[in-house]
Length: 382
Image (tube, rainbow, N blue to C red; front, side, top):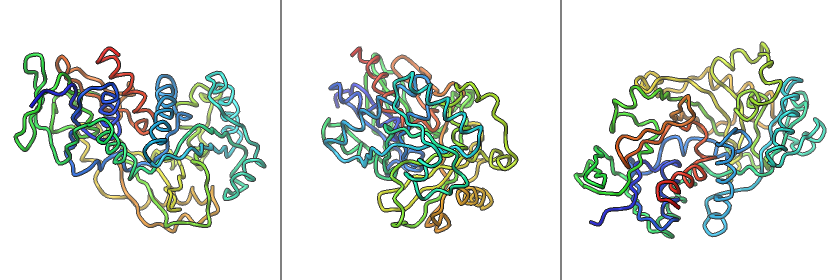
């Protein structure tokens, strides 16, 4: 078999984005996925594409990703909806952050709109008036359906660019072989490429465990819930809250951010890394979450597979403080796991043209397409 230009190991959003961006440059690409289909962090999140929550280069990657999502959506349905995001301020400190951030985003030429409490409640009537002191709305943010989007993105890459996609293909070894890199699968297949990139999320055991053990990577476990379809509710935006204003890196540059206090009401929520978000799916159901527990790459099993009822209860109680609709009509609840790194991404060159890229944390759905476009442009000198 003729060598590929690029083999990508891992078909989550980060791996799929690198495969697609290389294929768009006319490169031959194989995308290998160990499971029957992507089943980890990429399909267990809110499906919010929110450059509004990111800072620095990741904000830039997110904005480019929005452009790419929209471009692809015009020719192939990825479930992309351009409906924006609103961040709610619930007290004076959060409202101050919202106002300061409006000026910062204006300097970045990123559209936003400050809304008074009255304006917010008129536009989003399902919110409790006692919670809302004001809000900031970002019209350029997107929504996607997390259980569908990456599968459709893969299908698009296969159909339009001829990406060779192989699910049920665990990779057991990647080794330099002259000017190429050879990949060996669990089925005994040997594939070669001019470059191999490993985007295996929080899978740290199959390939190069010794590298991951000293990488500084940690894994975050998130608990999330989803209601039954609530057809009487039309959210018309991603809804993020005061806890999010206190958490997302985009707001850390605000002058008042360092002076934020922790109200007594937030202490237990902060202990479990809870910040409340809402996202309505196309069937009318609403995803609510999430929480964050952490473990190092060498001890991810300590996070367990169970869902903790008291964490779900904390999230639901806080959600009831924010919205009027019945959040306790829960159809399902799950745990998601994603890798993150203190440097915001873990990039490691195992050997020439053999690279690990993982640990982007919760930025994957928002920023992967733009990030991957820049990477493959460097690799292939475009």
